[in-house]
Image 1: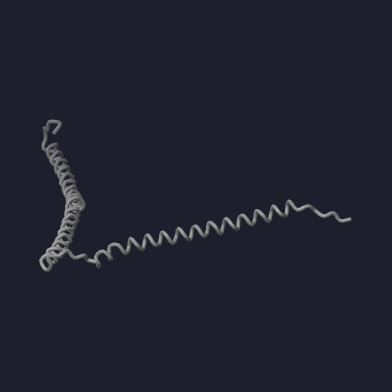
Image 2: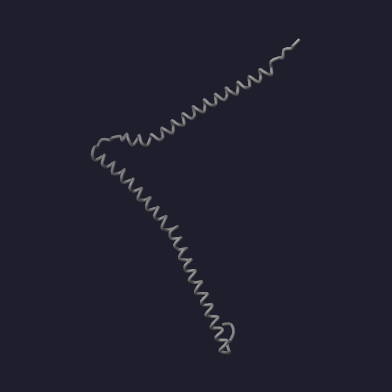
Length: 141
């Protein structure tokens, strides 16, 4: 209240003004709570829940693969004390690498053949133009 109130009419006007201000403030507060709830939910999901879930799944996957490989190695050692090479595992890991190397080798050979072919074509076209330019004209008499 900025001014002094001297009459009942002024008091009622000020009371109505305060009531309207409180209604607007309450509505704004409720709206901000709704917005804050949405923002908090987005923040929680985007910055806490999803990364924690991904981290948990990654940890579980690493543990599972390490446990599986450890269990296989332990069971193989327990069954036979001799060192045994797992050729299937080596084949599964080396086969894609070998295919990539073979493909690179074949593409290199194909590229070399194409370069030779283009070089031969280019040389023949130069010789043909040089012959046509350098041949003397026969005089007709």
